[in-house]
Image 1 (cartoon, rainbow, N blue to C red):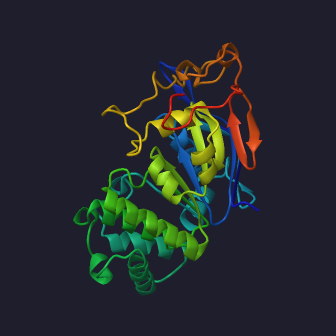
Image 2 (image 1 turned 180 degrees about the vertical axis):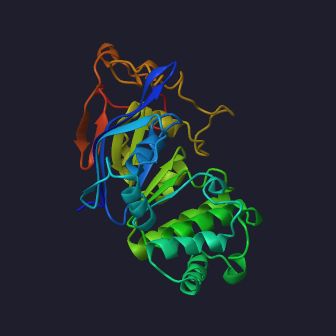
Length: 329
């Protein structure tokens, strides 16, 4: 059984001046144990709000509808206390900037030991020993001394390692990583990705990796979901997506990645136009105004997410072949 099953999830935000913002629209997906599910798309595509809705971490004006079952247990509608217990013990989340998640006034050791004291009932000494082992597991040297340090005394990459160590203390079944390598240089980014893969293999943890970076997706993901306008545009295993993508938006994202084997005369390819206004989504496909394959019905009919190959789905009316990377569409 999948560790997480999401069915017909929608997320809405009530605003004073802009009406209702439809951030996520009828999303269904599954996350298997031990796999890395990549979620990719531009800013505003609904990537993060999907998972904040699942985790019960939406802003006060947000509302999630549908179903999100974690290990068979429905998450939507759970009390704050019940969600806190699950989030601390069996589900974890790593954010883009660890400084927003770590308390700047408390030592790293204090913050880490509290996790074990609350969720595993350990005394302080036992918790400290476990925390030292966790820091060593994420390759932080001189771990006993590091416990006494505060977050500002660590580099960005080291803070992210601390967050990973803290999240893994309770051996969660599901780890959601929301752009955790965005602010890191390439070398540190690769180290963090390797560390996450190491932990996944060691503990069979399911990882959801949210990013706009297709290079990161290619390196870490087993399966990929491409989102746009709060909807799933395409879903496939990572090799199929890169070799045989079937959605125009996926093609646009892939063309926007700089490639040394394609001559661009110094011009980076982009997707023309702007993302949709989520408070005024069109009746049809949200990508239609930017799509080079747009047909008349695209503006009025939202395409269904249909099977186009083994474990490969897309939501698109276009039936012809797409352009190949490195060639004109």
